[in-house]
Length: 326
Image (cartoon, rainbow, N blue to C red):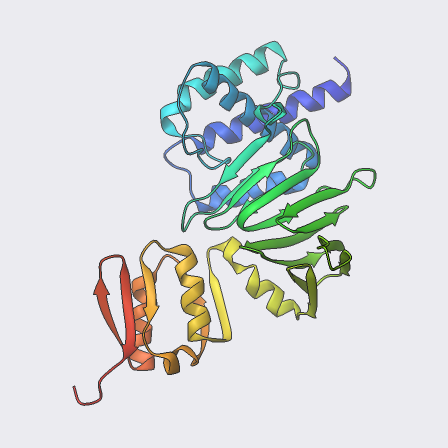
């Protein structure tokens, strides 16, 4: 076996060890950070991880196991541990890890989704990594094409450089084209926003009958918002960019946003919704860093620090100004 094959086999073995560790009961935040560092260190690590995980899913499909809601790409479910270990063992023993076609090679491509309040990271065949935020639906093109469709929600893109093959994100009537960079794309209905952390991207808004196609290029800490064929570009500070991307670390950060905007952001992450019954209260500025799942803690802050009253109902919490006579 030549050195290149030895290296490939080594990457496959390391990836198998990581996946096996993830399936254990002792997986914690520290180990997740170690895995993130390993994936970040070499694009071949990402490819090996993806191939073995895809082979596990393929073996599971062949065994007839139903997977109506795919588990996060980084962690196979405990109920499928035996299937995964068997598939990984066969791959490593027979040297087939780089031969088996991953599931997304089908003509339909691969679909990814997150539930409300969930985020997950997936690796693509080219080594790019995508982190999906809450309530996001995304499709990756088949056969190794560098293209995805963002149907709804928000995703962070860490794109592996490949000057010969630009990476394309289609988000409704907007398109983002990149060579190698880090950025987020958020789609809310017909409105799409793109925020660049590193590198350069090109954002295009599809032409309408009365308009020609509009295109802008973004550099780090620039944002574009596209809607109905029009694009608006704005500069952001590094702190603002970090704030907007804090969801990747399990936080949402406000710095002068209105309470109405904060409520709308919390509602993205929770099935139980906040309802503001006071328009004047909706305009109050708010700041701080919050765990989006800690809805009750946020409500207590509003009651204690902003003089609001919370009325708990089925599926919602109604916020109003407290009656000063009570």
